[in-house]
Each structure stands twice: as structure tokens, then as C-alpha cells.
Image 1 (cartoon, one colour):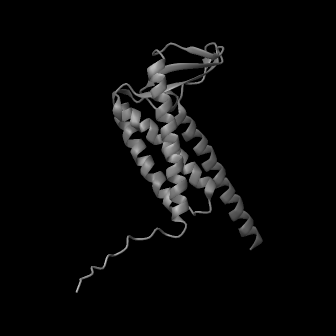
Image 2: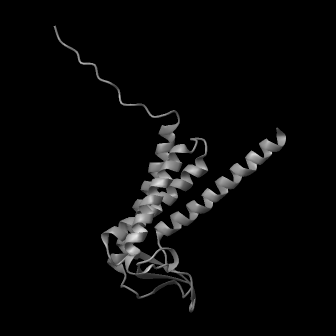
Length: 181
């Protein structure tokens, strides 16, 4: 007589969670791969602080390190540690928000994942090097230049815009329902 052991199944995902998790991990992973790959290529092919014209002076590739945050915001000697802690807190907050977002709100799921992927991309740089985050996309005319940025920054910015649109649409929908009822 053989003895059978009963295995308890792993806790199933909540309904709709499979699709949500797929979107989240796919977008976060895609942003991370693209960000890491572009930074790797930049570090292997460009010289630090030497602009390479792509579209004349308007668009250049300029490999720099940014020790601060967006737009070169810097908080002194402890910037690296402060921005690392803030980024980790933001990533946790974004994941909690993702968990509470309905599976049907694809725009918000994509937005949250995009911001998260970008935040993780820059966090990796901040952790691995005291020099800061690798930036290389340089736009402007002459001395009027936008701060140099990277793929992670694009993901954070686009994700934040989509998140704002998603929240605005939710407010409009709620106002219509309130007015109708």
C-alpha cells in the first residue's frame, strides 16, 4: 500500500491578476532591458562629456553622469543616498498602487509599470556607481539645451503623463456618474 501525501496548491492569483502581472512585468522588463542595453552601448562607444552630433546641434549623444535626480537636481554629498531611498520607497508605492488597480484599467497598469521600470533602471545606476546615473540624450540649440536624459527618464515621464490622463479620465467618469445619479 502506498502512502499518498496531499499537496496544498499554491495560492491562486486573484481574478484578473494574471493579465495585470503580465502587463506589469512585461513593461517593467522591456523598459529595463532597453535602458540597460542603451547605457551599456553608450558607455562602450562614446567618450565621457564629448557630444556626438546626430541631427546637427539639435540632437546629440552626450555621455554624462548625473549624480542628482531629474534635471540635475542635486542635494549635496548625500544625494545618492537620499535619491536611492526615495526611489525604493516610490517603487514600493507604485507596486502597491498596481496591486489595487483594476485589471480593466490597462492605461493605468501600463503607466505604473513604465514609471516603475524607469525608476528601477536609474536605481541600478545609482547603486552600481558613485558617479551617478548614465545620461546621453541631448537636445537643444546652442547653449539652450534640455538637461541630458536617458531611456529610463523617458519611461518615467511618459508613464507619469499616462497616469495623469488615467486619473483625469477616472475623475471625469465619476463626475458623470454623480451627475447622472
